[in-house]
Length: 530
Image (cartoon, rainbow, N blue to C red; front, side, top):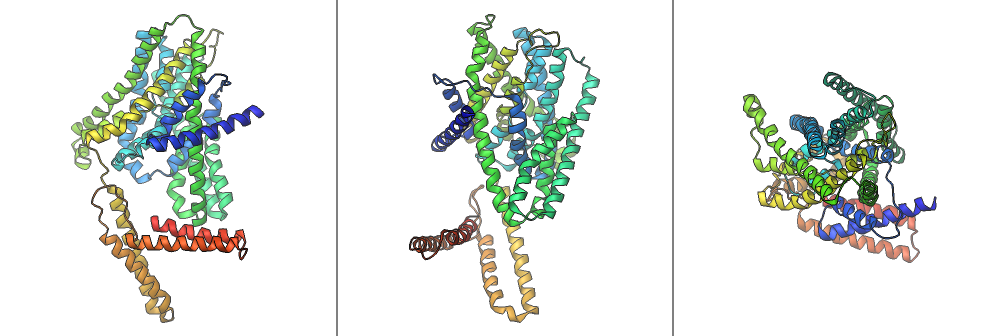
């Protein structure tokens, strides 16, 4: 028990230090977490930390996928369903097949074992892709496609992985027709379970108005979806994603402002800590993997380096070879598609092609490979598959992740400002509608003239600011208030805070009163910066 507590405290400390260092170096968190885990793993005297695949699949995967789906725009996801499907299904299966052939041809792995390796390393990581892409100034559609792909591709890869492992184990014979039918059943089953869980969650949130209880239920929702689907032998990943998309679509209508204000920071903290834990733990696995591989005398260092180079380069090149035809060929064949959705810039396609970092799902699937097949023999080349999986994770996350900002600058890709324009139009319409309602109330109830006038002045100021706020470059956040108004308001709020603390220190008010008033001041400051 003491060891578990020490590991947990050590991980918290590592997350804090590495996150602070990543911020100073302007490096995405997942990359430095992984490098930090590698460094910690080599410290002499450290006890080896074994990452259970069941722990990853159950404890880490659902709560990391769920908020990504919860905050995904259903409109944008649906509008980009074709490119997302090409990447999340087509590219995953294509990568699986090509990697299987390369492993069989160059490394003499049995073809079924090669398919296991291919399925393991075929899906880019949801966490890494989103964490890196959202920090960079790129068009919103690129981020939408990457997020959508990373939500669905895990399900495709894990279904293919299940078939490949069964073939190696000798518990099932492979047939294309049977695999296709099973893939359809598992996918549809996961989606239906996710819809059912999402529907039940919506019913609950509609009937309960208690922020702590609702947040607790929201934390339970992804686990309920995942466990229910897995018990029924369908896709738990698709169940979690579907529940998140369904609930996210209804969330603005059913949650109160208290639940939204309190729930947002809770989920942000959960995501941050789990991201840190999982990537550090990935790094900590490498010494254990190398130790296991060192017991196998069949491989020289040169062979291992060569194999790692072949597979790492392959997964990068395969993605680049796939994305351009997938983007352009359908438009060449179907002219109506081209008229509706014109040819995208090749620079945008290149960025999507380069954003293929692997991560937690790949390692968890590799660790979940059985030790022995049905007849008792060792699973073919299990240690080599583990080694290659880890190298691919490191190579794609570090090489592609670190070079992505440079590539974006070199290609001259910038945010197209579509979100800013949508935000401005939405704010303008909302404020005008509110002002129209106030004018309507003023005509029917003159007794409220003083309060209405104060509100009219505020809304008129908002509208003038929105109409006059035209950012010069895309990606600039629009202001709801003028810069002078923000500066003066901030200064006034700081004076309020200092006065409250003086009153508390002088025992004029107690700490509970201080916290209540301070929360109102904090909300006012957040509103200024929204």
